[in-house]
Length: 360
Ligand code: PMV
Image (cartoon, rainbow, N blue to C red; front, side, top):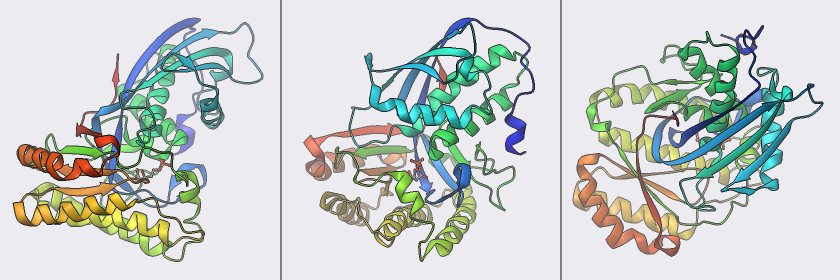
């Protein structure tokens, strides 16, 4: 497939107005995407757990204009209030997707959005937000082309979400999603994410992710800048190669449920992501002292409890604590006794692996 396959030739139906709502989850990468080529093509493949509780709900109301407008026409409401500072990101998204959704300038849109997680919790809302918006727009396209099949619908929703935020393409479905062409994964593509197509051991069913909110402030360095810094990065090629190798290794690990090897890859990926930040030019650090305190506590607890708790990080200071469902009680106790003290205002969110976006 190429991007041209997502350009519609005609629309068979007309639709003057309507409304659609999607709830779309966030996701947490196990093998990380960091560095991209033109048009949001990833420099390396990535794989993530789709989350369940952390989600964005977006309603798009649309009304056909009498004449096609010269620019995009939309209002944006966040938690019921007009949110002007979110509009440029949406405009960029609409610009990037217009070629594939040629109806965009023929409608006025009211986009109402809200997150299940607290505002400015430091949890990135771009994956859930962009995937929810892409799905709503795809739903309108399906009204215009009712014969569209559901496989194409999901693929194109992922393709469009990717143009808003790379990692968003992995939030359309669950519960293990791979994005980026990789030799060992059939059907994998740089254009959209696919459901991981191989056997996954039941130990990963309902895998838990407790997100410790270490720093709720906004990041000093955005992901977009961080991705750009991989262009002249001295270790870029080795890093991209490592991501491919880690995905290859995960195949057996997922199949056999080898948690000890799973932990090694997941934690190494998290630290490598942050090592890339620390070794780019300019260099930067997104971890905070409490991030490191938590990591050390997790290592000590894993050793003493013989559980399989591990951590991963996204592009920020918060820590995702991952563990199998059958260790939930022990890990909850550990989090409450030893980790809560390192969270801002003692806040954390208990989430688990989920099934992807749903239409409401
Ligand atoms: O989707 P973006 O451009 O915000 O980049 C996300 C990058 C990481 O979260 C750090 C890794 C990943 O694969 O999700």
